Image 1 (cartoon, helix red, strand yellow):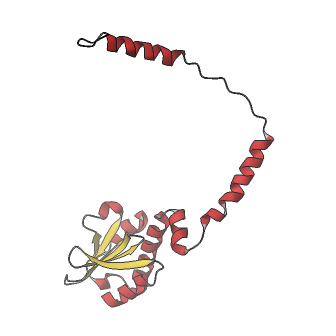
Image 2: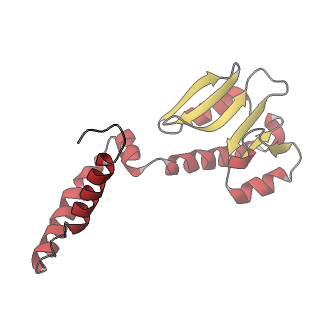
Image 3: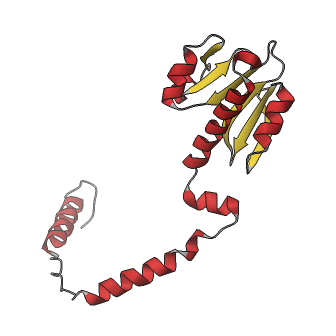
Length: 168
């Protein structure tokens, strides 16, 4: 795969954006979170992407694949050249990278991006909760005693009065 094929593939995912960061790195993001980075001006060209912990260990054992600089702790790998993985496998790992980032976005935000309303389910849940609460008899709770707060207030007043330079 060349950079243009990687670009077309990544932009095929829903809600994906691309931008150039750090001078000459083409970043692919979903909702502002990166899932792949292609070094444009580097020769040979490199691609880095997020992967699962299992894939991270397996991929790093292969030649031409290293832990991504600065991002290895977040389970990112870097292909030292674009042909380090067969095209089909590269597509699979890029799709997995996108999926991981997409699933880390909150359900509410995913629904906003998709244009659906997650709030449609909430009224049904609230009405069910009200019905179950109405079925339970309510018990009275003991009123809180204010003796502790009165004692604290008195102590503070005494402390203020005993400070030097204060008028009574």
